[in-house]
Length: 61
Image 1 (tube, rainbow, N blue to C red):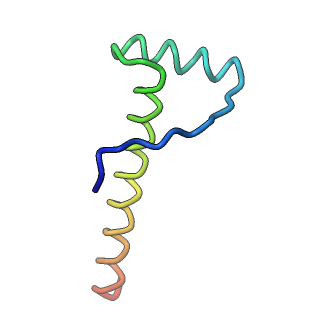
Image 2: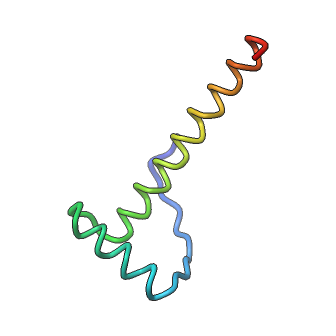
């Protein structure tokens, strides 16, 4: 996997931006870093849930 990052234009409402900025500040991240962190966590959780579903299917549950 490449360490090269893609640039993605993203439009957010002002209220969402303010919430993300405040949250990022609380966790000592930039807004961009906070968005990347949140997306990474969502993908990780999705993979974990998919793996659990696949195991359940294999077990006949």
